[in-house]
Length: 75
Image 1 (cartoon, helix red, strand yellow):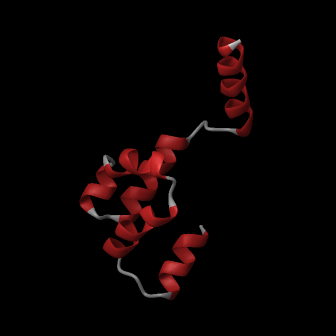
Image 2: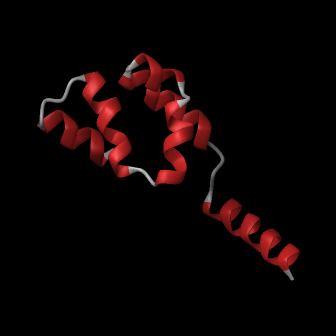
């Protein structure tokens, strides 16, 4: 993960990594990320696991399918 590499080079603590990552995330995702246990506990490893669980199965194909269904409904 590029962010993690940069954070490590800057010698950020685990808590700082959690707090600062939201700067690089779309506003629409921030509220969700703040509800995750890893974010609340300021535990970087736990937070990364939470993110993986939340986004597992989010594939390019799935996004296109969702978009097509919404487009169809709109018509």
